[in-house]
Image (cartoon, rainbow, N blue to C red):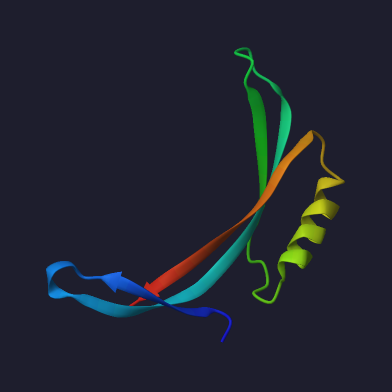
Length: 89
């Protein structure tokens, strides 16, 4: 099962227990520099795309990010993915 991971969660003095981590959602985030502010710091704009398919590979995500980036203005600063997971005891 691709979206179920086992992690160890410490319960403190009572010892360790095993918990499950269930993948809920993946988000693809694109960052672009859109100029410089009055202090000389870069102005970063981020665009986020939620509910990415669980079957999407890193290559799929990169190709998608590059295609979207080609339509955006500003200097590309990076692409990231964010995974939201539920911990289940």
